[in-house]
Image (cartoon, rainbow, N blue to C red; front, side, top):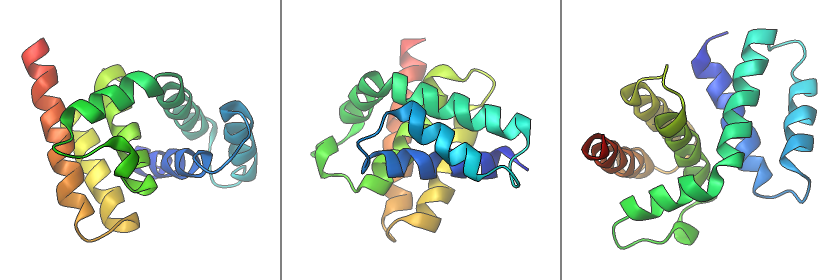
Length: 138
């Protein structure tokens, strides 16, 4: 399986977590147990690392997203778009082995598949702003 597919699994759990009252750990474990036949150990580890990190660093990630939003508030975003951005920003901030351009491209592809027609351009713009900010900071 590719990282692209594993990332899509992480997105699905992160999206569903917005509707659940259970802990992130329980949601992750339940999802991964349900994927026994389709995810190998390497993919499970990637999904787990993405989810655990995106949830652990949620406040910092959300703060970065809000800084990049132009005349928008995080609470106004579609939950699908918020989950897509959260995964991508987590990768941009914390996963050194994943190039920012890959994180942005994969987020845009998820938006094309799961969100509205306008979402890919919106997601690309927000992540581009964040990438520029990160570049200026380093």
